[in-house]
Amino acid sequence: MSFGKLKSQRKAKELHSFVKLDDPHQTANSEESSLIQAADANTLEVHENAMGTASIDDSEHTQRPSLDQPAAKKPRIDDPSDGGAQQGEEHAGKHAGSEDHAVAMSLPVPEQDRARPAQLHGCHRSLPASLQILETGRHGRGIYAKSALHAGSVIMSVTPHVSVLSTQYLDQYCSACAAPATETGLKRCPKCKTVYYCNQECQNRDWAWHKRVSSPGELEPFGLNSAGDLVDLISRFTTNTFTLTSPSLTPIGICIAPTVAFANHSCDPNAVIVFPKTPGSPATMEPLLNLIALRDVPPGKEIRIAYIDTTLPKQIRHKELKETYNFTCQCKVCTRQVVVDPHPAKALQLTTNIIPILTSAGVTPSSYPLLAMTHLHQELLIATLPSSLSQESLDDAIRAAAKYSAGLQSLLPKGHPVRAVALGELGKLLGVDEPAPPTDPAQASKFPPSGPARLKLAYESLVRAHEELLIGFGKPNQGGYIGKDVREAIIRLERELGIWTSGIKNTLEDAMLAQRASSSR
Ligand SMILES: C[S@@+](CC[C@H](N)C(=O)[O-])C[C@H]1O[C@@H](n2cnc3c(N)ncnc32)[C@H](O)[C@@H]1O
Image (cartoon, rainbow, N blue to C red; front, side):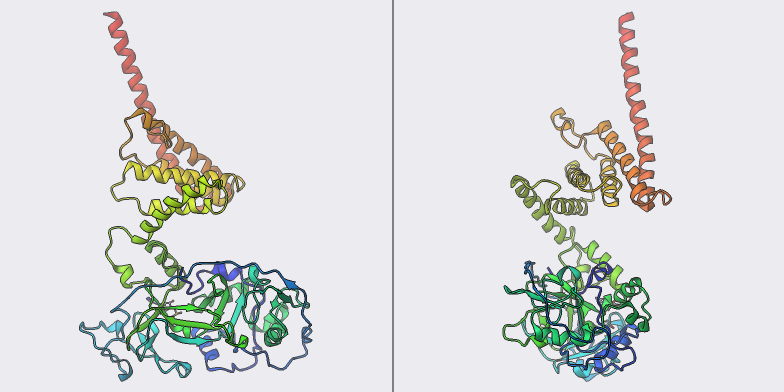
């Protein structure tokens, strides 16, 4: 799993509601602070949070309280990932205006891909000598290797200017150094009773920030008058924010490191961001963001990280990149001509194998993780439906949709939008024309049924879905966009069912006429 940038505003909303804001009347004390402002046109100023040595003011939270009781440690393990090679489109053009980044390339470089030195407000001075920031028309500014980098080398290592834990992890990780709770636990701030620290040293370090947080009045000078304003502000930072991860890659919060935020995206990245917590590294530097080379990077090549989970299928990757970062990735992986995207095909193989194992282990369809797995399986089956649809692939997708929908029905109340949408999806799948309905009666008795029974089930599912959509998305909204879509599907099916009914009627009438004719002979 690649953990690059924060994926969505949704995550920002889950963040610990305390945001570490500095005094709006002070000038930023680092080169990179001014860059945040330049990049996002915001008045927020951020300082290095490595040390809590700032003088204590006279606010009501001024007295640093002594620490509270330990919190329990609840460790979690997630998977790491890496990426493969990517060439060409990441290279700085050889016609670029600086001798620093001259790269020998055999093909002419389009104007928009020619790299030139970027305007940086002095930030580049904090870059290691092996790197430079260049700019192209297509990707804006990006980080380029000046000298050769080797797989596994630490390209950059910086303490983020700001790091904030997600609310759910506040009692499991230190709010200063992001270290996971040890056996002895973390100690709670007795004043706010919300954040936790490893020890007094971490609390002291965080104090310069922590003493300023939490009172809505203190946010007003920043133009933040409500929690909504705050969420908007955080959301505007989304494109320049990194997911803060534990050493085992659990996403535990977000952080801002403006220089690293110059790294552009590739679905086949040559670098990755981690917070490894090197044994022996000083806690005062933590959380320490490391940009690591995943493979050898020659001089002149751009350093690219993945903003999103690159194990996802291309359609989903592109949707996320467009929605969150407003660009369409044109890396080699995305532009490669493939009959079937290898990612969903591989994932489908896994879900196909894992679901029966979970089921035979007694995991019920509505319980975690089988329900989520069934939904993923359904999505993958739909994503990999062949262009010339086969009965088997369609029926597989219907079976997965039916299982997912049934699982949700036992968990969510009638009218819940998630349950309503799932039921609508099932109905629509059942309503798809059958490519090759089974002629064998044994086959026909299996789920999903075939012919008129299938259409009837589709119709019933859609009608139920529509009822629930009206609840979940609001009656005045007519169930929203999905409600309208389902309504149209219902009307189409009513017509088709009419044909089936009249077809059966005609057949019966024909049979009766034939019987009458034979008996009158
Ligand atoms: C965090 S910034 C990266 C630095 C940015 N290029 C700059 O000039 O400040 C993310 C933005 O860079 C651009 N970007 C990043 N990767 C890209 C890519 N592969 N293709 C096109 N644009 C990209 C997008 O505009 C995206 O919203």
